[in-house]
Length: 383
Image (cartoon, rainbow, N blue to C red; front, side, top):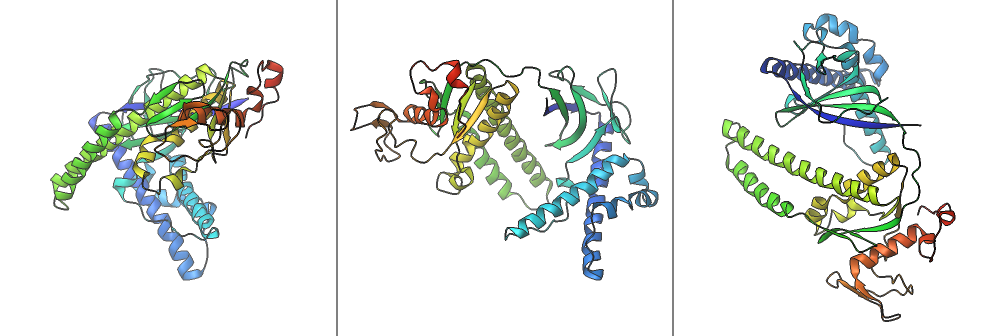
């Protein structure tokens, strides 16, 4: 068994290499826009819909006519054409669902990545630097962690973000761990005051840096709004805002990685609510919901548990905070009521922790009975 994973590293190109990478992305952006224009004109003039094969067959002739494209990797330019083809397929899928969103022309400032096949256009050298066709010299990479032993590198994506360069490898890693022995099952209730509350009483408070980041973001947005359009000061203000947003996203991602790793290390069976985060983010608490990044946390926990031989289950979220885990009685509560006080059986407990117990027993009914054994765990139910 193999798993497809991605590993991201920081690149440190010198000024000449950085300029070359920028020119390469600009050339790929021109190719993308030219292919989009060709598709539009072919349909308007002849009523013909072009596909990837039609445009890929003309790529060699385009390279002969354009010296810029001739100096870069052919397979990377094929990926640019394939990217446009994926955009059209996604557009047709949206049309079938009654939505629009025709593929748009891309600005060079927004075209920030290029796909490569490792060994064809991009090579990892013995000195652990990389070379890219059309870019002079070898580019330094910060290998903050090694790739897994026995991993097969399939593709690589060179990316630009806020003036910094990165590379992301997609690798097939062997499932070396296999199924782990049963440790413990847990239910996890996600919230805003406490980001995570588990069924065994543990709580993870929402980090304080979220509020501080929001205040600074508002100041930077006001500073950007005061700048004159087209001025250099506006570009500098825009870059400061982008870097702050990227740093906040990095902090949020790092925190989600740490919480998910702790859950996977402690439990083999983890249950979450199957939340409709899109709908929750459209209400009055939209900003707080998006800052909490529940979907990111659940996604990280899911793939880590799968790699460790564990299981992540999702249950119907309806009534998890209203239902009593002991007697099953439903007691309506407002959002301001933070204590579960059941009038049926007299259970009094923190609302979030009690909801986590309900989530756990909905996903893993066998965990509710006393003396749940390994034999019972083989009858697990993923709700």
